[in-house]
Each structure stands twice: as structure tokens, then as C-alpha cells.
Length: 364
Image (tube, rainbow, N blue to C red):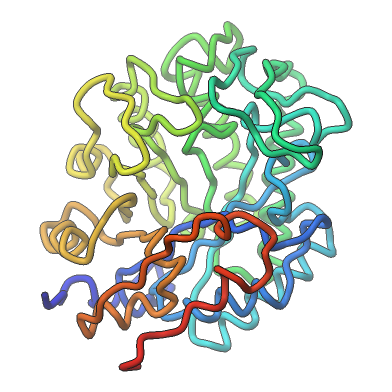
């Protein structure tokens, strides 16, 4: 099919995007034990620089935020310098790239924290088949609730990471408040049982996200800050009965900040909690007037339809980008997509295999 809407350039508040195709964040675990971005990662992102916008893999804001083996960080000068090599290479290739800021919260393990429990909004254990730690696969643990007096430090960590991201040459940052990680744990009543200023009502559960947005917007103009939400997702054992009211409120509040975009995992391809009808982009359009990005399970056809209808301004693609570094070109020329069937190389420190060894289409 032709995709006139998908290939229309887009002005992201003064940042020109060549098309409406966004590379979604994809954790690939190639940063090594030191969590420092490297030349292999730069090559990987450059291969995908024809995307209108790249959102980096989730990147931890502090040691406390860690919880995935060999994923990158942004909390030391060495990490920022490593990312500078990536951003310089992407920009030289004509690309644009935002850094996604990440804190795993309860989706971590004490093996990452010298025996200290992971933190969360409340002491609610993640029910799942376990977590891969530096000492092997382990069962999830019941997290320690963050004390009220600790929360300002978490907010400060987000701001410090945003400052380093700017120094590293990124075009902006995305706050990861989706997929069952720390900020999502505060947003959702399933995981937030607090009775202080950060829990007990829809507005109070939104407060930490607001605090983080306001702090990050002190390091960047708000129009260079995106936020990611996942109202429909069951990933990391999430899903709350009042999800529609909670996420509609959060989107309404975020509308007041003049953000770069709101990135919504609206698709159901990674699991749906089935606690009501799924929240749609069209529904969120009623409360969020800024740039809206859809994500999860989109095809070229459904992405074109979402943009052409006005439901979305941008569409992010994740898994197709694993094995199709030239995804934009494949869409443009109607070339078939290459599969990424070997999941054993998706998240492992396997070097180039399954990472940078996917060739462009022969017609390129």
C-alpha cells in the first residue's frame, strides 16, 4: 500500500522529522557489565537512522534503578561519554534520537543492589516466572516501599540523568512511565497502596510522575520531553480496575506541560489485562492536545490508518526494527519484512549476532 501520511515529514516542536515512523525503545543488553554504551551500539542505531525519530533503549537513571543485565545507564560521566559516541554517529547519519529514562522499581532484584531489596510504591510482589540476575535466574522478591523522604532523591536522579543526556548530545528525553516499571507502579492502584501524598487517590498516584516531569523539564525545555504510558498492558503483572480513569487523568495532567509527545502503548500485542474495554488513542485525544504517538503491534497499514485519521501523529515500531534496520525503506518500497525468529539473541550479550548482522533488503 502507499503510505502518504506515514511518510509525511513532521515538525516536533522545531525538531524536523523526515517521516512519522519512530523506532520504539528496545532493550538489547549490549552495554556490558559496566553499562557503558559502545561502538557496537552506535553501529546498531546508525543502521536504523532513517526512522523519523529513534527512542533509545531504556536507560537506567541510577544504581537503584538497575534491574536488567548489561543494559546501559546514564548516571556516570563515562556512561554519558559512551552515549555521546552514539548520538554523534546517529546525527552524522541524519537521524534524531531521544534517550528513554528508566527505573525498574519492583521489576528488579536484590542481586542488582548488593542484597538490598528493590523499591516500589508499595510492598506488592510481581507475580511472574522470575528475573535474570547477575547470579542467574531468581524468583521475584517483595519490594520495599519507598519512604516519603526518599522520593525527592529519586526525582533528583531523573533530573541528573536528563542533564547528562543533554550533555551526551541527545535531541530530547522520554520518561518511561509504562510497562510496570517504577513510575507505572506509582500510577496504578494494583501496586500503589500508599496513604501519603503519593497514593490513595487518582490525583495522588499521578504526583510522582508530575514531580519527575517538572524536574526533567528544568534540564530540558518541556517540548523536548516525552512521556510513555501503557494503560492497557499486563506486562510485568500490571492492570488496575480503575485504569481508564487513572490514565485519562494522567494524560489530562500531562497535557498542561507542553511536552514533546505522549507515547501510548495502546496496542494489545504484548498482553491485555482485560479489565474493561481498552483505552484508545482517539479517547486520549480528547484530553491530550499535543503530539500523540501510538505503539505495539502496528503494521504499515494500521499505522497509516491511525495517522491519516488523526488518531495519532507518530507511530512507534519495536520488534520489526530488530531484524529490519531499513524498516522505513521496506515500507516505502513495499519490500517484505525479515523475521526475527531467534529470540535467544534479543536480550543477551551476544555481540553482533542478532543485533547488527541483519542486512538491508537486496533492493536497497
